[in-house]
Image 1 (cartoon, rainbow, N blue to C red):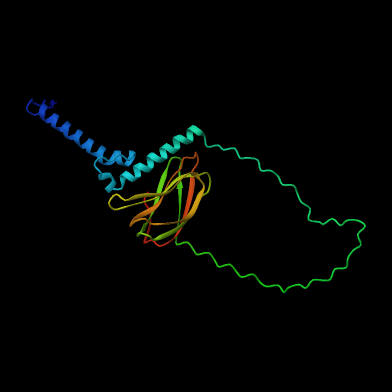
Image 2: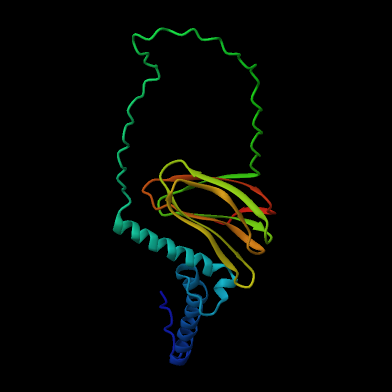
Length: 228
């Protein structure tokens, strides 16, 4: 049997090379932390690279929803419904006073029945998507729109509620939040794009059960995409 030859001192890396390698690894970790992790997770973007990549907007939404979740835990999500007073039933029968002679009423002319005009059918939705979110999971759907184009939408859940943010982002760090909701089972309406870019919905499931959200849209937009 032959024993493997032990490395000589010259074969081992020097202290200087080890130090350089450690510094390079530390520098790479700092760059990743500052340009990717901080913008995407906490909305902190000292270099502004994260906003160009669209990571800062995601981090800002995450921090906002995290604050909302903390507020939910403090105040509790259970709400006591106020009792609905029952209205007294009103009899529709008229009371005829006794002792009054009955008057002979002449028959009234009955106007011919006319058919009510049919209501116009509601416009069909252009795009529809259903997404199932597990507890704690999030998703985002965006429309590609030009400034002043109008989109009409409706989204509903099958059970429980979702935290949501309807917002837009575009070039030159453009960002706007049109609407925010917490623990909602749905929303509908329309909005006009404030600028050229991507406009849509971010949902997060803070419930203890899986929730399926269904989004329907129509209007002026060129693309309909689920980002994650």
